[in-house]
Image 1 (cartoon, rainbow, N blue to C red):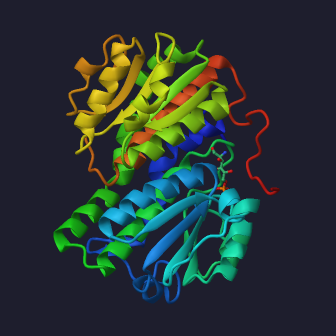
Image 2 (tube, rainbow, N blue to C red; image 1 turned 180 degrees about the vertical axis):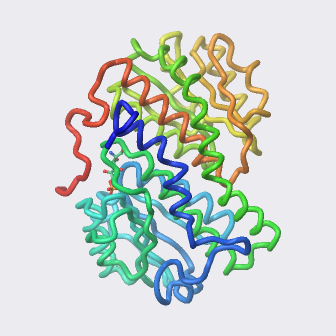
Image 3 (cartoon, helix red, strand yellow; image 1 turned 120 degrees about the horizontal axis):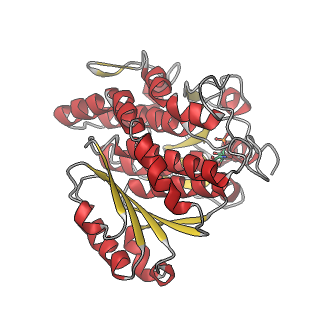
Length: 366
Ligand code: M6R
């Protein structure tokens, strides 16, 4: 039940620290990822993997996009990510030793399930399902599985499903990375970051009052642009999907470096530009992208790590500070204010938050 919350979506946003903690429970310990969390024979199979194809839809696809940055950086394996409706009808080339990974909250999404069935004919090393529903078709048909433990998600807009998928994919990344000789100190640091994720999400949730305040800027807007770089680009995509799904504001996300290649033409005083800017090697590049927006009168809304020195960059816009977090878990943490933003904008606009028009929770037809 919704309890003290006005909508299921809000309740589910606030359940994330617990859902992520549950997803980590008995899977990671002080010395790292525990044995065989992907099922019987999982570790042996993962040790043989030479490449990964991730297939999913919607929010689950965005989780897969984050995982590509992680797995390529830490496990040095080639990763491709594709939406299931494209994957299933494409003549995909599968190199020997490739693992097929399906990500689905429901485990019943028609395209994802069909893609997985199609993958059987394509000569993969094996299939792994990352899913929230243990008795679902996707889970039943996969060789290996790692369940997200988000609990039932009622709101059509996916929230806790996304951050628990990121958590499961982080565990997969760590397992693959360790098997491929990631430096022990680095591995220990990444594990510590992941263990601290529930707490970091809790701190991000404490920003709700500030997010409520800035959501007023969106009430009468028709469009919004979301920007991120690196693993925060899929976070920007997810933030824009949330906003369009439940507030019906047209939103698009771009990797910030693409601005000059087209979308900058849209920027004027009427265009709010939301940027996710954790600290890290790409911060200075992002800052110069934001300068381009500011110079054209665009209204910047920046979610920045406390130490990112963003205030000077926003002009008439606003910078909201998050506690600095490790780069590995930053995508999951920076997702939180974007979920809250979409939620509060929708509430202000009076839309049906839990049941957006034209959408169903589970897309079981093609
Ligand atoms: O159950 P699945 O994860 O397979 O669902 C995939 C998408 O339909 C889903 O993530 C959709 O995009 C959400 N409504 C997004 O909030």
